[in-house]
Length: 94
Image 1 (tube, rainbow, N blue to C red):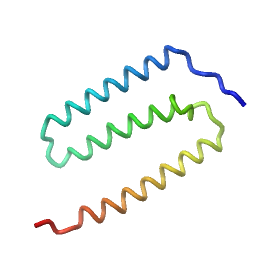
Image 2: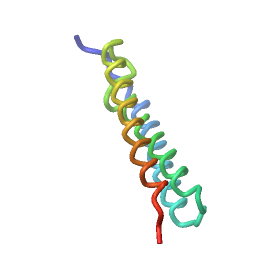
Image 3: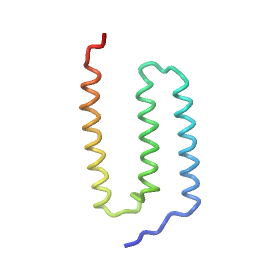
Protein backbone atom coordinates (compact mmCIF):
# COMPACT_ATOMS: atom_id res chain seq x y z
CA UNK A 1 0.00 0.00 0.00
CA UNK A 2 1.43 3.37 -0.94
CA UNK A 3 0.77 6.50 1.02
CA UNK A 4 0.56 9.95 -0.47
CA UNK A 5 3.82 11.76 0.00
CA UNK A 6 3.68 15.15 1.69
CA UNK A 7 4.17 18.12 -0.54
CA UNK A 8 7.62 19.50 -1.07
CA UNK A 9 6.52 22.56 0.90
CA UNK A 10 5.99 20.42 4.03
CA UNK A 11 9.48 18.93 3.66
CA UNK A 12 10.88 22.44 3.33
CA UNK A 13 9.10 23.63 6.46
CA UNK A 14 10.31 20.62 8.45
CA UNK A 15 13.84 21.16 7.13
CA UNK A 16 13.80 24.80 8.23
CA UNK A 17 12.44 23.77 11.65
CA UNK A 18 15.24 21.20 12.00
CA UNK A 19 17.86 23.80 11.07
CA UNK A 20 16.42 26.22 13.64
CA UNK A 21 16.52 23.49 16.27
CA UNK A 22 20.12 22.76 15.29
CA UNK A 23 20.99 26.42 15.80
CA UNK A 24 19.18 26.31 19.15
CA UNK A 25 21.21 23.24 20.13
CA UNK A 26 24.47 24.98 19.27
CA UNK A 27 23.42 28.12 21.13
CA UNK A 28 22.34 26.12 24.19
CA UNK A 29 25.71 24.35 24.22
CA UNK A 30 27.52 27.69 24.27
CA UNK A 31 25.86 28.73 27.54
CA UNK A 32 26.23 27.18 30.96
CA UNK A 33 22.71 26.34 32.09
CA UNK A 34 23.78 24.45 35.17
CA UNK A 35 21.66 21.40 35.89
CA UNK A 36 19.30 22.32 33.03
CA UNK A 37 21.94 21.51 30.37
CA UNK A 38 20.89 17.88 30.11
CA UNK A 39 17.16 18.61 30.14
CA UNK A 40 17.44 21.27 27.42
CA UNK A 41 19.62 19.06 25.21
CA UNK A 42 17.29 16.07 25.56
CA UNK A 43 14.20 18.20 24.92
CA UNK A 44 15.64 19.66 21.72
CA UNK A 45 16.83 16.24 20.55
CA UNK A 46 13.41 14.72 21.26
CA UNK A 47 11.66 17.41 19.22
CA UNK A 48 14.05 16.82 16.31
CA UNK A 49 13.57 13.05 16.51
CA UNK A 50 9.80 13.52 16.63
CA UNK A 51 9.81 15.67 13.48
CA UNK A 52 12.07 13.23 11.64
CA UNK A 53 9.93 10.24 12.60
CA UNK A 54 6.67 11.93 11.67
CA UNK A 55 7.63 13.37 8.31
CA UNK A 56 10.76 11.73 6.93
CA UNK A 57 9.96 8.23 8.21
CA UNK A 58 6.28 8.71 7.22
CA UNK A 59 4.87 7.64 10.59
CA UNK A 60 2.28 10.41 10.39
CA UNK A 61 0.44 8.76 7.50
CA UNK A 62 1.08 5.14 8.52
CA UNK A 63 -1.29 2.47 9.74
CA UNK A 64 -2.24 2.06 13.38
CA UNK A 65 0.03 -0.97 13.70
CA UNK A 66 3.09 1.06 12.66
CA UNK A 67 2.15 3.79 15.13
CA UNK A 68 1.78 1.16 17.86
CA UNK A 69 5.23 -0.28 17.07
CA UNK A 70 6.76 3.21 17.19
CA UNK A 71 5.03 3.94 20.52
CA UNK A 72 6.26 0.61 21.95
CA UNK A 73 9.80 1.42 20.82
CA UNK A 74 9.63 4.84 22.46
CA UNK A 75 8.29 3.32 25.67
CA UNK A 76 11.17 0.85 25.70
CA UNK A 77 13.65 3.66 25.07
CA UNK A 78 12.19 5.64 27.99
CA UNK A 79 12.55 2.60 30.24
CA UNK A 80 16.19 2.15 29.22
CA UNK A 81 16.96 5.86 29.72
CA UNK A 82 15.26 5.94 33.12
CA UNK A 83 17.15 2.88 34.35
CA UNK A 84 20.48 4.18 33.04
CA UNK A 85 19.96 7.66 34.45
CA UNK A 86 18.82 6.36 37.82
CA UNK A 87 22.13 4.50 38.06
CA UNK A 88 24.15 7.49 36.85
CA UNK A 89 22.49 10.07 39.08
CA UNK A 90 22.75 7.98 42.26
CA UNK A 91 26.49 7.30 42.06
CA UNK A 92 28.85 8.89 44.53
CA UNK A 93 31.27 11.02 42.53
CA UNK A 94 34.55 11.96 44.17
